[in-house]
Length: 298
Image (cartoon, rainbow, N blue to C red; front, side):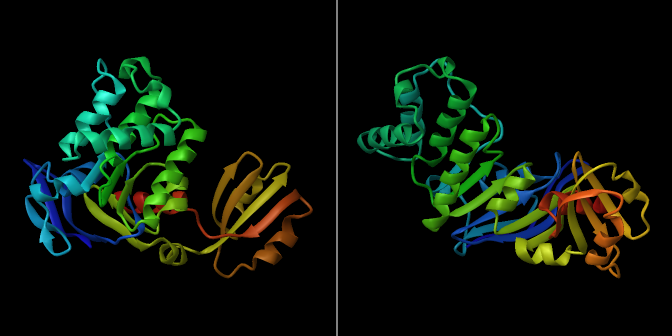
């Protein structure tokens, strides 16, 4: 297992990471989530041994992470970096050789990945001649080409259109089946909700929520309904039975007081709205994220 224990990173008067601990298990996607400036990237860089923690330890299968682990880690950074004047094949060969993949096998893997991502025709093009989305694909390939055991993706969907986002999601999910250790850091809560088995939510360097996503949803469950409608539903925001009301054009996510029966609530509003959908739902990860961050910031 990949374990982070009591990790602290201080910069002069700022504590970027404040005594956090978590475990990443094989064959699952671990979501490292939080707002901008929360400490996610600092945490990732300590796992990568790019920066040294002030205190705490990071181990993989009981051994401290060090230079000997460099070749088993694949990292897709949020801030991309490719040699734009170089050809695609040369850039990928360079990154592969940095990870001790011999040139013959690297060439085979380069062609396999270019084909898999549908960009074989750009093999001998310069990076700067590619669209932003295809450059992102090259960056993704550079992170996974050497078949690493530990994969760390920092905002991997940035710059992709919806079709390519889906393709990258499917590729990342395929790594789960091969038992890899996967850390996913993203601001896209809907994507994290679909992909992550466990999450670790951090704010101002501190843990604010963590665990199995299914258990977290139960913990924050409440008495929630999703209501599709036609008409003016603004009156619901002042209804005393409503604890929280989020309005999205023609539907709303509503949290009712614990003692309110959802069916009785529905009966009481059907004369004021044309109801197109009604369901009792779990809170979304997006709502949990917003609520927990707001609470921890107060």
